[in-house]
Image (cartoon, rainbow, N blue to C red; front, side):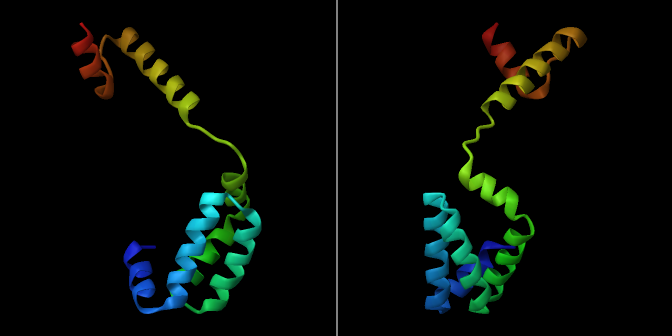
Length: 107
């Protein structure tokens, strides 16, 4: 789904503008209750981009709810990936592309 579809709908329709504002608010608040209400309203709006987004969110609702309710961070994963890249570079004597500049500049 493209952003242009939303911008066209919101520039023409006050209902589309309202749907966008409410969606941003529910993401900022991380509110599952607001999500449920928004999904119903988006479905009933008959605005194609919002109906489509509603269907996609409902198809993977568990992941969306987890994203809203659970604290998450990719920091530990990124740190592990970097360690593995460094280990591989030491074994093969070829630094990975992302780490070449850092290795050279640190020397």
